[in-house]
Amino acid sequence: MSVTKYLTSIGLLAMTSSLAFAGADQVYGNQWAWDNNFNNSNISVSFGSGSTPNLTFWYDFSSYGLYGYPAAIHGYHYGWNPAGDHLFPKQISAIGSANCTFSYSSGYSGSGSSNMAGDFAYDMFFRNDSSASTPELEVMIWGGNDSYPIGGQVATNVLSAGGYTFDLWMGYNSAAGYETITFIPHGSAGQGTLPTSGSVNVNLKTFFNYLASSGNTKSYFNNSMYLDVVECGLEITRGYGWVWVGANIPD
Image (cartoon, rainbow, N blue to C red; front, side, top):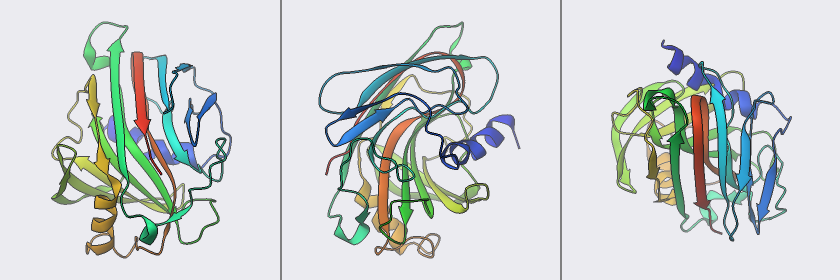
């Protein structure tokens, strides 16, 4: 297993298995943005204006590690929601559509683009009840990345949305105690270059429908489950530069 694959495979579990919510946050109506850093990593942040979450963050990490997942958010992260909005938890069967927009860009403060590493991704947590507590399932939808998801690839070209065709990866997150399911743009795992800009504008319901019907995933996911949160950000594993993230996760 490569260093990048190892670090990425434990990255989000390291973040979410801790209830120490480090980093500044800002509320945007019923959504919010969070400079989610791990172990007080030095990630500077500036929050943008407007009605939807957007933030710019800077960092300088020369070696591979798990440094943070700054993100735009709607819902409850492990029971925490500074926006105080009560749309979530929301039962999957009650979601008719969930059209989300997620854009990102980055710039290099060092020499050469190969220095940046990580994955731009939606991160969603689910439970079998409405308690908005510790997750029982994680589902991710990746955009630009140079990493490997948790587990292994179980299917290719499973669906198309937002200009991408996605492969499916799955694996058990032993430290956090739940399965992680990842949709990743076809053939992009471990490609070695983190794109400097992009977007992942999708209807999340398309992915939920797949999860509920696929032989690979329906034993983990069903329409009676509750969605606690939708997060859109960058999992930082290395780099010297800046990143802008903006998203709209509607009701």
